[in-house]
Amino acid sequence: MQIYVCIKHVPDSAANISIRDRVSIDENVAFLINPYDEHGISEAVRLKEQFPGSEIIALCLGKKDAEKTIRSAMAMGADRGILVETDAVPDAMITARVLKAAMEEDGQPGIIFTGKESIDREGMQTMFRLGALFDFPVANNVVGLEIQENRARVTYEMGGGQTRVCDMSMPCVIGAGRGLNTPGYPTFPDVVKARKKPVKFIDMDSLAVEPSKGSLRVKELEPFVQDRTPKEIKGSPSEIAQTIFTILKEEAKVI
Image (cartoon, rainbow, N blue to C red):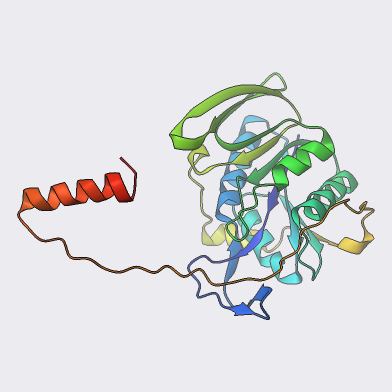
């Protein structure tokens, strides 16, 4: 079985990100694997143990520098990588078409993993667009996965911590959530071995990708600013507790 894990090269959320030219960010910051994608890689490794002979392919659309992210995915257990290179910043519609074309050129997916969303754009679209293009069933924010007799039983998380279970035919697309597993991070020998694993480089323009009927572009980026005014709560312990309760109930509306 060929297991494709679609990964994204994203800025480190702990980095000090600044906006440049109103529509892009200063990329002189650390980049890494989208954290949700790490759960997809780890689940692919688990499936490979369950189905010996399977192959894990880490697939990424991005700039040349994204090779480092693919190497990280291979250190986590992917067998090889594919980097579709472009200096552009494609929207979710083009991204899904490019990833599909790269997979079809490479082989036949038995299952496709993505993260439940990317931490940079949080669009939560790629997995659904891939499913629509391939005509594969899709489940997102998956926290449990069992595969038997060419069917996948998935447990996915909904709002408020509620979960649902559904059965899907395979091939299918799985958007991995944090509750799916605990990623196994690579050791130094894993990193060394990953340097020797093959990465195929494809120019995005060389793929036969049909243009989408719609498109999405960034009009302007603005820094997110929160206005917070500290307020000291005074009184006896019981009065302080009552004040906090009132704030949580009437202002924050969380209870």
